[in-house]
Amino acid sequence: MPTSAITDLNGKPVVFVHTEPERFKIRYVQPGAVNGQQTVLVQGEINENDRVVTTGTYQLKSIYLNQ
Image (cartoon, rainbow, N blue to C red):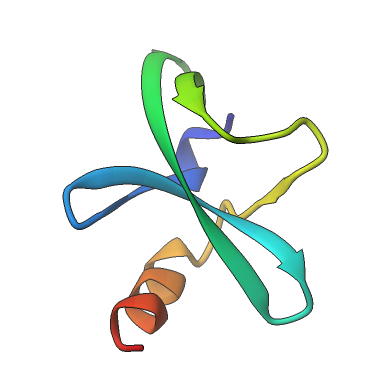
């Protein structure tokens, strides 16, 4: 998982997954070892074909928290 995809939401690590145009889902994860720009996920519901957000996570988090 790209390390840039993992962000913090209310004290918990999450990843935003792009599911359809203008739609994103939050997936809670447990990051493990970091190897350069990649992070191993110890736990989380991320599938191989999921489109994770790696840039603009701050904006998505702001939108989510203001809903």
